[in-house]
Image 1 (cartoon, rainbow, N blue to C red):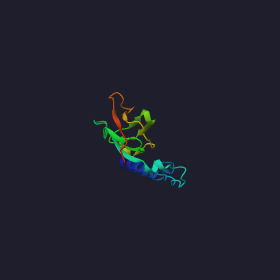
Image 2 (image 1 turned 60 degrees about the vertical axis):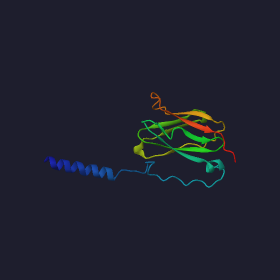
Image 3 (image 1 turned 90 degrees about the horizontal axis):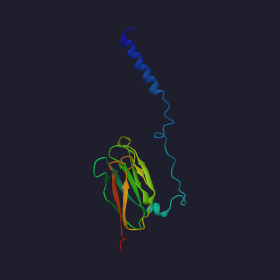
Image 4 (image 1 turned 30 degrees about the vertical axis):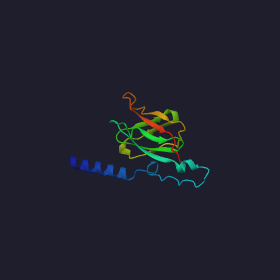
Length: 146
């Protein structure tokens, strides 16, 4: 059999295998269930939380913005993306430790809501790139006067 026929048969076989593949187990293809309307599952602080968008990068500044500034007594959550490779976003004092997928996956990670009570400066770091050390700051300011 000539070589070109073997190549044609191989390409056809590959096409058939790919087209018959079962994608039903792929979580990215599976729609997520709608959020429950139960008020017990969502607290009022969750809906009133300020969302701070943070981008992590292997190039300085590693955390953008840096420093991240929030106000004491105000609920906040972080919406985190990567500008390049896989990272982690960790703030030990607030029990935040999340994996941030690499940019090519186009995923965003959202942390749980926190409400910092004490003004101060807190270390943010990436465990994956700890040798750099890859770190930033969360600055919690005094509450604003009404």
